[in-house]
Length: 605
Image (cartoon, rainbow, N blue to C red):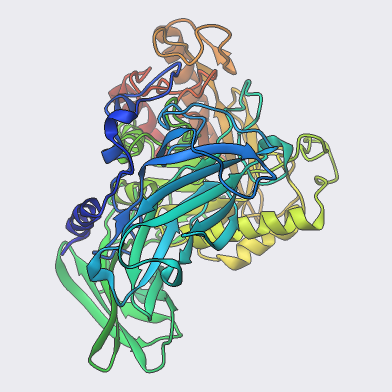
């Protein structure tokens, strides 16, 4: 079974177990300045109904997205008060698609509640409760029993709830969330309590899929691959939970449904598989291999899951002129794409649907870009799956964190890093490691970006060096713009409108991490009809096209001088920003796609 078919099967299986805890007619979007076409057609039954974990696919699961009860209480409250209404999960309470559209302050907690039943054919399995992302501090209770908690707004976490559930009848699930937004120092990206300029509406609570899964006692927890091009092989790193004595892994690799390799070996060490005549992944040929991983003890099947991978290698190397370049699969490739905020007028941090998330990426391919910089946000897993299958390289930012009342916004001329205490430093590093562990299996991600400009920048070189050592299979941009400290594979310039570059260096690539920012407000597609903002704003499409052409013409001669990558601001308008290639509602591509594609093509030659 190929990956697409496998995902289709588990979608169906998930929908069979899908439980909406209230009638669909009880829900409607909250008022919003702007809606997308996907938000307008949304219903509680279709809220992110796809299987959420494309790199480890099993055939049984239950989607808990849908209508839940919610309430807001003082932060000190130990019990959930009476429900105030229904909220549509997985959309944050501040968003229109939640059906609520309310703010939650730093001295309040947000509560969720719903019931669920366990399918009878799950008996004998362990039952896992998965949260793909909740912002920011979470406590989970099942049938009145505290199951555990998590601090972090961007990455998945799970609990084994087997000992707390009732196998017959309804189970009660309650979740309490606290989020201080910019009154705390935790990683939060661009969220602020008073949105303005380049800072956006805060997001609180559940904002990615919640789901249940039955797993065996010995179970796969993660499948991660590492390409070794010189040997023509792929190395599998398997995370296995539970007793593994005497167990082995059997991995079958397929290409286009045809078996091309098979290997087995003991658990507890990487498993290498040679791929005959490997077809390498690249933006021009985003080939993905499908694979099935089985865990066995003698003839007993312990666990089975489907996955996929792409064979590709990213590294720094010198071109024929002696300039350090970003080499993909042994060849220099100029990387060009947008700064991608990933915000939505109706879903805020949450794309209104999987199809909506994929649409942005399809547009980037149509206009001839080969990468994007995912800006201080972590997307749902399926987003990266779409980047894998479409062929878009990703520079992945770590969401920045900084408290409003302290000197953590480090200016470009500061010699000292931001002020963080030991607890705050530990939390940042914990969330950074969680992000890397969560995403490092996706082929598309070629660069980690731990810091954006001086936003919450601290222990700069120590953290950059740690990331370089922790994941040596990718590049590390450090930091992106402003306050460079001399460490990282790249030295990154931000220049508006630009373009420009740092002089080439013997040990680091010169990249342009942000430039452009050309704005055009499009009437009827604005978050705010007046006082919109752009680095440079124009009144007509003709003016925008003329100035965009000038930027690209000025970019071209920098490439033979050693510029290795350039990132244009940005994919879409966001709230009052009008710098996007697309309007915020994704209804208007401001410049012609074919014209853009032809304009960009010489950049890669």
